[in-house]
Image 1 (cartoon, one colour):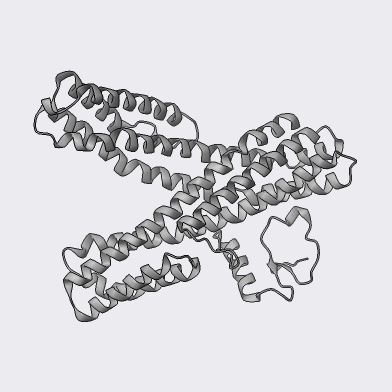
Image 2: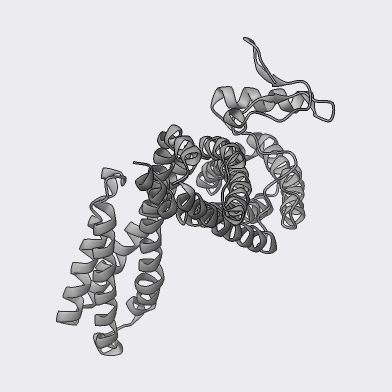
Length: 397
């Protein structure tokens, strides 16, 4: 290992010290791609992440299921490994190593709590959408109050009241951004729905649905942004490095072999979870950027197609790169629609241009949704290790 003044690098195969195993360095051993390794190092210095060349993130339904199952298994094994560490902390060698890295454990524990809090808030809004808003939508299309089952609407009112209470409890947690602590539109929707039920008033029902729609249209995206920011700043590499050092101390002590094995397996699982998180955050950022570009084009499409004409070659290049990097089954249909949009632009056919742009936009939006969903699911898995981490901190005091 060479930690020169110019750059951290590894020029000869060796066992990387545990203290830096979770950090970024250029691996320049024979089998490595030098350009890719320096690119990885430069990205780290800039504070960004590069999607691992050997582990692209694909987000088809089958791949997503496999990733979710793998992440669930890894979080379970990691929790088991942390519980093993907690049970071995009585050993002086282990206790000393844990004490040395107590700050890394505490920061990871706090960051995982933040992830969990935003995931909770997002889940409540999802419940509002599925259990209140969607069932109420067809109700506003009736002609007279007599066409409605007002007892049924009263049950939705109670459901909404419960969800608002849950949101207010979660929003009061210190980690939640202050802008999310007062769900005013949902509270207004609750009041309007209550008035509608009490007075059999269709206009109040319309108002209630509008307020709920307003909340659902704006709040989830804000929560997603904060959740993804929390995932991006989660310092799992520091935890990997800390646990690697603790593992070295364990191998030098006479300890329960089964517990030590559980811990080692947990460390391997943590390493995989960290790699998956980095890849998903990187993928999410790229799809977010593409989604923003297509949304801007979509906003001007009905007025004219001139902006699409000159910007499309650059946007298409980004889409092609995303499809190439993913290697998943959804790529060819999206590329096919891109080719059809090319033909429509060449033929200067406004109707076809709009038709195939909307198909491209729809496919891209579905991919971004699945990447976003996959990242939230992984955050949910990571949350499971918060409790065993907290137990270790408590015993280390």
